[in-house]
Image (cartoon, rainbow, N blue to C red; front, side, top):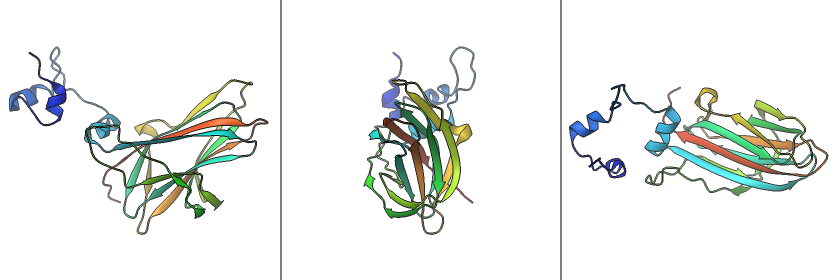
Length: 199
């Protein structure tokens, strides 16, 4: 009978030989690997947060605030936006002037076996007077009435951004601005992992 991989993951290995055999494909005997982001999920270091903004008016801005603690490296794996209409700008800024963090969003660990929780806090609807340094921007062109649009401003490990808390902590703002003539609904979600990083 085949070994129960779920039990194996929880630490009930069948034998050292079983563990070694798992490193190779059983047919062509190639070394089996998984991508870095996939591994972070398995190790319990990946986190996910999301929020939907309903009725974002013309020239309205939907914002996420990322609050990175001191000496913490946050690896942004994915910034994803879905909108019910186009002509919107997405911007990631560093060091905004914040007068109110807004409402904290619950972050989830995709590995439901792991009890790890993130060090970075994510907030919705912060009050910001100055956006800070524009690190990354993206534009979604106008779409027809009733036609949605989507953007992966950061899509995977090849486009990863590492947010650094520095000596005293740092904040970052991810903004979605509606330039269209009608109000739209906007969905924002972020995937990130947290592992040590040496500068």
